[in-house]
Length: 77
Image 1: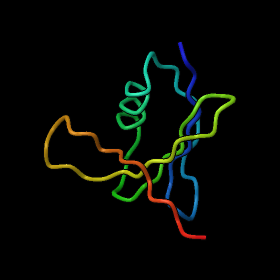
Image 2: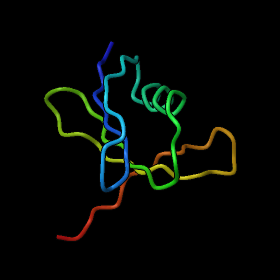
Image 3: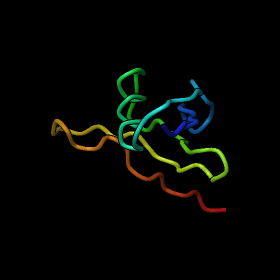
């Protein structure tokens, strides 16, 4: 079972970090969303050891079952 490392917070600070063991990436995202209070604009970095993390932004959706995480926009240098 893959072990996903994650960090959730705003652009300014990490609010919570940890590890989630999950069969799939989607299950890991669902588990994080179910265990935390999330706010629109929160950021998530998630990945597995040895690979760079993926970056996502939390968005509010009106449709149940719609993905709440979308790839984060990259900031200009």
